[in-house]
Length: 252
Image (cartoon, rainbow, N blue to C red; front, top):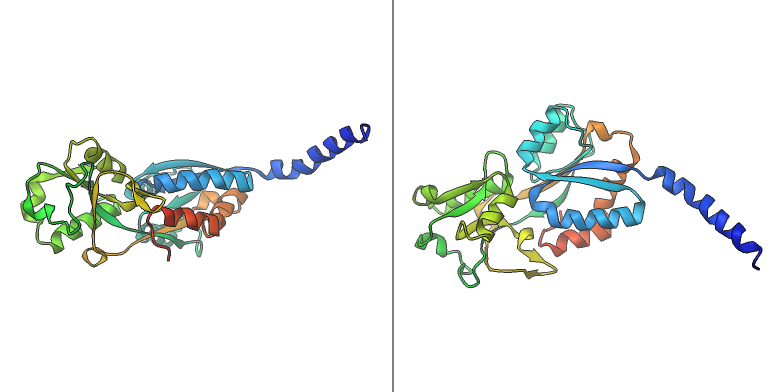
């Protein structure tokens, strides 16, 4: 028995070699609202496949510009469905690779418990100094926030109080630090494992903004590479979907 042990160990190493040889990295541009779930998904993806996802987080509009300027991203996880469609049309992404991986939800949030009521009436009272949101020119959640204020007919009154973050992460940080008493943020930033993580929140009714369909797409730099395609397949799997839902997203 003792003589067989080294042989078995050697055999185990040999059997592991093909997996290690195939393991690769994939450069992923990730919409800022999807930071927490994607960090979890990336860890599980690496455990399950051996591939490592190298993640960059930011505003979808900025990623679009960077991709057009030759940034080395292989996969885009967008905060909308328009940007991936545009990249496909412009032949910067692989045709037919696009799909919706999550449907985002907008919320009004304050770091202060009890400050935001469950109907969002705190907005019309106006007894706050600053309201943060992501830049609507580059961030879909910012566009959704502007749409909401427009439909509520509150935009003219609240315009002077708006503080724009470069992306949804910065909008959240303004509210989390108290520099803004309120912030329009993604539900996923204040929600995990089926519950609110801190502060107080109003879930903005879906009727007040266009659906935030978040699409993934394989970029040209990822074409014919195993790791990018494996990641996109993994996002459609049960484990990734469970993580996505745990952060308050809907699935398509």
